[in-house]
Image (cartoon, rainbow, N blue to C red; front, side, top):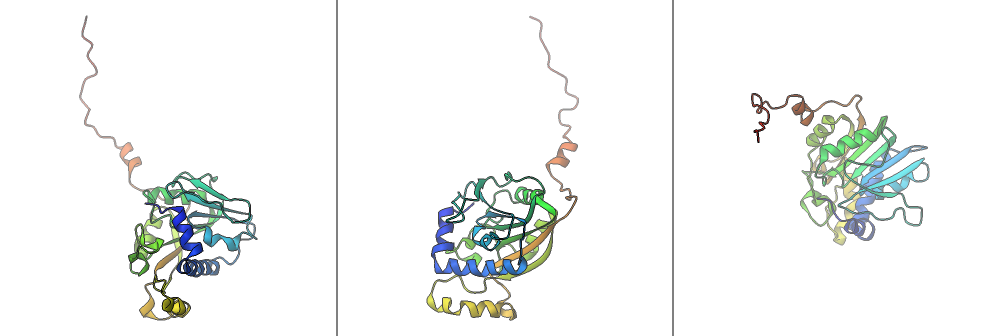
Length: 248
């Protein structure tokens, strides 16, 4: 179940907790990808809060938003680059995306494997994608006060397996958002300290969010499923005669 775009906008742009979460995750993304010069950068779900650092240098930046979620104009004060689309039907040519970011897209999709197939399709052979999902072991997935409390939380092993099954090979993993999902002032004052501690102390290893960077495997591995079933159709009608026409 996708969240509503108005609720996501209120959280990330108007609440102190949402702005803090946006900064932490965006800073980690920029550490992974410090540059996107002359590249095509695409975000799916509600990834637009993370894409602003790439606007100036990238050749093109596109924000894809799923139909059940809804869409909003973005970026503010500039020509709109946000597009409404289906989970597995993106208006992007095959093999044209250099960098792809998913935030509040995978865990809320009703068809996650089809969505990952679409990610594989649009990426260039040397392209990279970052999947940002709620950490099953973290506090953020247990609270419905934030968008990370909705959808399917993942363990690292679950996410990596799902990516590998669709031909997306994990190359880098990390967790972040070690601060609690609370708007109380005492936690807001301690947020930066807890984020720094979380990177070094084992007691804070369960960050609220998992970030996994992946590259495209070519060719895409085949999965058992409908295509295999069609190759081996059921024989339940064998031996039955054709239609009988009675004389008038």
